[in-house]
Image 1 (cartoon, rainbow, N blue to C red):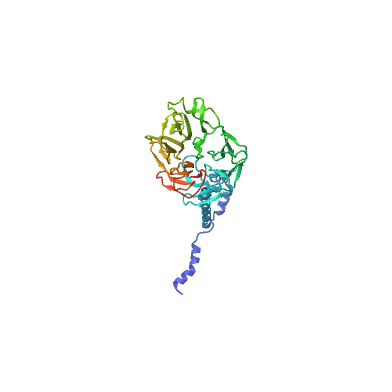
Image 2: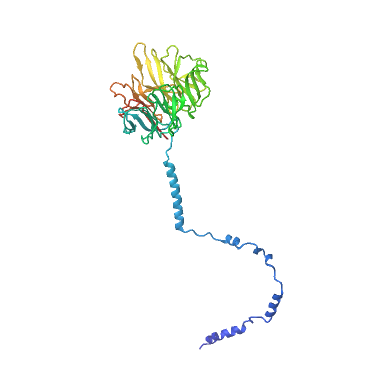
Length: 432
């Protein structure tokens, strides 16, 4: 056994002998003194006033969120957002009742009396309302409904001819006009008496009178025939009023007539006026003014709604023939007016011209389309204002009768989809 081994064995004894006494000799005296001394009250310690949670909350560490739960919550949020966007996107956007719009389907009545919807791009059509006896079909301004006359019944459907509702059936056999109010809530019917009545398409209520003596065009069922854009709260009236014969406007719900152009308010002589049309922004009115010397002929004029700024639209002046400009229609953007033109040569037959388009600002004009000696079953602008659609009643030599023709309003290029109709077609307005 080495010296180191002997030392290690004796080490615990040595340390124990060197260690101080565990309890001092005066330990009992100290305990007795503490027992006799009064202790400090607990309320004097400020830290006792604070709740333990106030301290622990400050020191608490943000708990860890399980990764799977976080991913699930994120996916749920993304799903809700996508769902909301899909729902919003699935709602059909509606065009304004006035001004340019996108082109939808062209609806017309074929030679059998069935109502067809045609695609002007590829020329295809489909029957959406079968049978015979249908007439005067017209699309609502918002593009969501069709109204048409079926014998003596006024029928409203969706754009594809589905869900038909007979809105009225009595006393409409002689109806000669069909249109819509700007809000697409009522169908307007022109009676043989000259009165206009409005039918609410959502109820079976009795028709409400609209106008006692209507002045509406015969070639198109345009809203500008009746309602002033953009609110649609005024109408135009031709006749004798407080300032003599002329053109007046008044609020649709009543009120006094406001003179726009009468023989008392202008120095421009005229025998009568015809075909007044509101501009798409409601600031001007286009119409045909016929001179006293020849009340059967007229020129296209425009005037501000307050009666100021009267001027002739076309600057065209023939050398010999007289000119007749009728059936004025504004382009959807209000920059142009289209009308029919006849050149009356005293030494020959009336010279029928194609549809004429005149620039309102400059007076420059050009002709588009075909020469149709017997006029048209109907013609109008496309919703986007880039085309003229017409149905010649008597086409040019070599052309088929009663064919729908779509004409580029700028170039005059003619497209013939091959559709036959004996009435005015209607071009559905869509949101741009």
